[in-house]
Each structure stands twice: as C-alpha cells, then as structure tokens.
Length: 156
Image 1 (cartoon, rainbow, N blue to C red):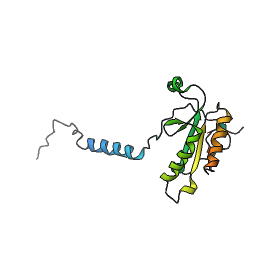
Image 2 (cartoon, rainbow, N blue to C red):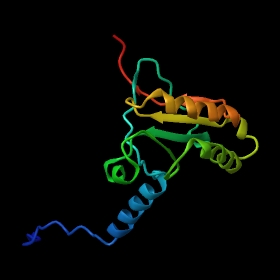
Image 3 (cartoon, one colour):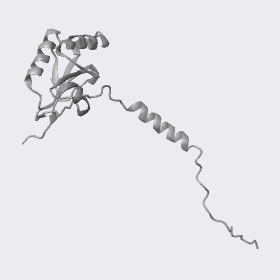
Image 4 (cartoon, helix red, strand yellow):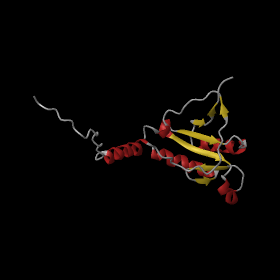
C-alpha cells in the first residue's frame, strides 16, 4: 500500500503585484482624459438668484460667460466693492464687451456662430443699472441670445 504524505506547509501563495503600477497608471490616465478643467478663474463674488423654472444649457462650448458682481476680498483693495464686469480672467468695462463678443465669435466655427449664447452670471445683490448697460452693449454687437444663470429651487 502506498503511503500518503501530508504537506507540512499549506500557506496560500502571495499575490503578484507586478501589474499594479500598470493598473494605477491606466486609472490615472482615465481621470486625466475625462476631467474638464475650469477655463476661467472667477474674480467676482457670484451668488446666483433662485428660480423655479430653469433649463440646462445644451451646448456649453457655444456659451460665452460674463460675470457681474462685487470683486472678491483679495481684489477689493484694488477695485473697490462696487459691482464689476469680468470677461475671461480680467475686469473690464462695458466698452470692452464688443471686442469680447467679436473674439468669442471668431473662435467658433462658421456653422456654430449663429448658435452662440451669452450667459450672464450675475450676483443676486447687483444693481440693475450695470446689467442694463451690459444688455444694451450686447444688443449693439448683435449678441441677441442671452441666458441668465440661476440656481434651481423646488416649486411650492
């Protein structure tokens, strides 16, 4: 008769970590490719007003953003506390809106220029005088598709 031998060492084999750096690199590349970075730094304080009826902007790549509000605390010593207009990454005046809209139109393809939307992100405490001036300047440069940004609240 044959004898059965018992193995003295029944430990499980170790997990191979040779492919672990490859997996981590693939995950890192996935998040780098799929994440969109903020294009502009917001220099003004913008607390959006509340709205019950709100619709999402379908194509954000066709939107140009104009921010209106009081400068952030770090810029108040230089620019004061009155509402200011921010175009891209700098404070501008109402007269600069025409050049801003023209450059935004030039950056779009010719087929998409008719679908360009100007999104106004205005602080809820901003006076309407500066908003009216911006709207008048947008009319003068034929930027007639205007969207007001708001935060959505529930209906009561």
